[in-house]
Length: 71
Image 1 (cartoon, rainbow, N blue to C red):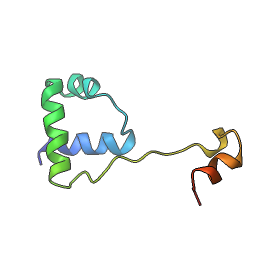
Image 2 (tube, rainbow, N blue to C red):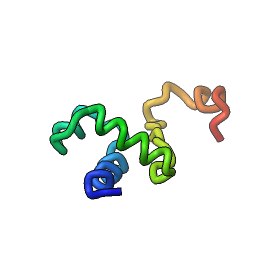
Image 3 (cartoon, helix red, strand yellow):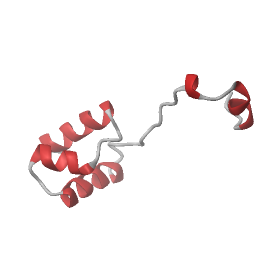
């Protein structure tokens, strides 16, 4: 893991939906290179997943939560 990989990890922790193109522009490398770096970080289990944060206040009603089996 080099400095760019570390920075990619930090940025993904802040916003895992950041487009690869944005990383490529920030680090002055190709989108393909960003993709390969992130894939490698996943393969090495440095990145162990990408999580979704739900805004429960935006659900229409509580029955949506019950219907999908969310405790």
